[in-house]
Image (cartoon, rainbow, N blue to C red; front, side, top):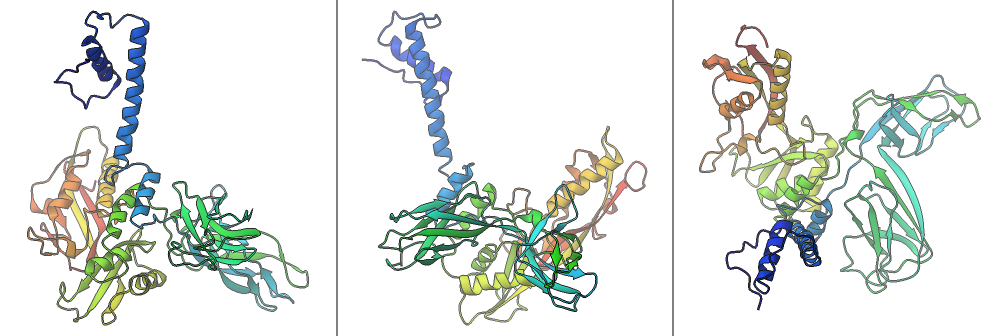
Length: 501
């Protein structure tokens, strides 16, 4: 009987290891087969089996890796695992902007700018494009009117229903914007639901899933749970979105098309946006899904604990960080009430619309207890000015060194990491804790010192207390529990010359 050696390492699964194991197995049966390096049919078969074995074990290892939250790298696998726990990876959201359209002089008739009219920034090569959500009308005798435009492209597709159960249709355009699908079939309009668990044969419902390529698939019922659509199915939806669609005030300057008033008189139209557009976010990255999907298991259908408020606030697109404080954490807060502080993506002051969306999320979508009073508020910021006296390594210019130090400090104080995950190096004053877990509200001087010291261009930092300070003091920086530290002025001194770096 073939016998394998007792000391074989079964973790060696590459081609060479499998080939060696096969030859050891063969030699236990055919001890005279010693010519393992010559070209013959037997060795050809051995190497073929070793090659196939190496490929198959590679596939098996990949499947094992991709079945675990902490190791999975493929977006489609993370989406599939998220579905098992009822979590849907967020797709991109679109930005909206309020625009004012003007004409040079009043005309006798109304001037209508129809929904879908394109307004954009001046950049010809890569403009940020918006479309009017609804008609904008400049009334006769007036010279301007306002409306809202969205960074999204409307799409419409038609499908013929075969009348079969569990009909699925895949939309052709990407990236799909969540919640934008409007479905009408021959037997009426259909409504999107999470699942068909509580539906009847008469309910016109559909479910929608978005794959790793941001392509949406619509699924209908089987006639027992959910009605089967009939006739032609028309799907209106939107694509686009993402953070690239966010613009500053007075940057939307071009309106496309030619326009006339209701009497046919041609008019020349101009457009502008008095204020910046609303926030928008890109689709959840692989790292964000890996981080946020397990958190969703901690919150089911309600908002009760302090952590519940923070997790559910982060479900709102545009929210980067959230902190919930009650009287248990801050004695200045009244009993049975709390403050939910919000840092938006990119920092700064959250819009009123974002604060309202957070309040809806934690009071309506995931309701809290009726007797609890909640205030959703913008974050309070603590400006951190950094002063450092540094000596440079050979080969680095002052300009390059300064840029590298400022970049490192910016990354340290960033709300999120470049991959979209939470930047745990920085946080609220409440999150700076002692060994026993009690908040101390102190930003360690050593943390910021290490950021500057670890820059490749920096040879050393001065030894005197005045050579490295936070807000002019060589000590840990006191931060209120509800404050968020942001990088202020960076003052760098060249240790060799004593002048500015």
